[in-house]
Length: 138
Length: 96
Image (cartoon, rainbow over all chains, first blue to last red; front, side, top):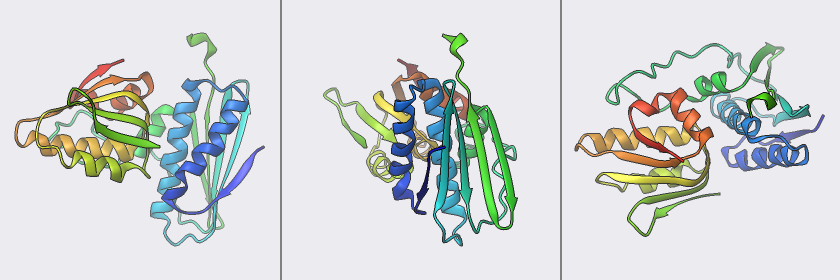
């Protein structure tokens, strides 16, 4: 499975995107799979970089492609326990006046990927998410 | 890569990928608006929650003077994000 380590900086979002996009191009992954996977990669990478500020090690990203679908595993070493799979309450019916910028990232990916799993042990956070190809939808 | 600028008709044209690393550029540009504006997403491929936060912040600020952003030519994937975010009820949005 292709894997790569990424330094903990928002500036490396572009490198994460290119790593994934090159694999998607090589494996003919459809846009309906690419878009939510790119979104989940960015939101989770930003989450790890922004909120686990005590982390010193690089973040490992592994991407597997099969039958048009994609499975991603992200591992953060020396991480605090923060369950990204826990449902986030976002009132999307709220008026413009009531809405506050921010807090949508995890809410979005929980709706857009097929599975999202989180495990934390021995100070290591492992996040796995998948998106399957739905060829029948065409 | 992300670009934002005024188009020939005074609309705001966005191009590329509006991710967390590019959101400052969007915030700087949209922060300079002081009235109703049309934002053309024809060439915007991608937006994440960082970009949504800038759009929402701008819409809230403009609404104080009775103005608003209208977002046009939104692709299917970005429209899905708007729908899951509840933006379809707080922005005027036209799909591609």
